[in-house]
Image (cartoon, rainbow, N blue to C red):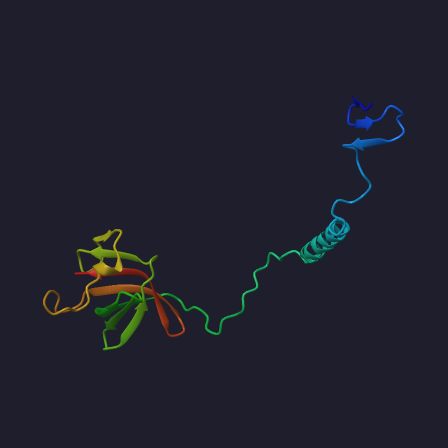
Length: 172
């Protein structure tokens, strides 16, 4: 006659003689996936070596120096100067304004978003109204409304052949 009894993690089934016993839910020495389990230590070893090879060069690199090392430019910046004249053309897409100064000399001036643009009520520049004006408020010649462009005084900084506007004053 078969007898069933239950122990904590074992279920034994035996006959009355207890000579043949089958144990369930016990760890077995046989590998469930014999082709996968031997690869796991190899993969862990390769992942560890890969991490070391990635982290080691980064940690061994010298710290960045605080000194700024810019390549010297071929043309040093010149002192600021003032150009007074009439606006001949404005290219709004590139931000370049062409000013014709006295003596019929034309200057292509780059107007940056940081350029300060102001309008004055007197020709001497004494009664100037600083404000938040943009390049669109400077008028180039357009025959129906403005037959002539605005008269401006532009403080520029020069670097080579390039002029960058620092301050633009629109004169009456």
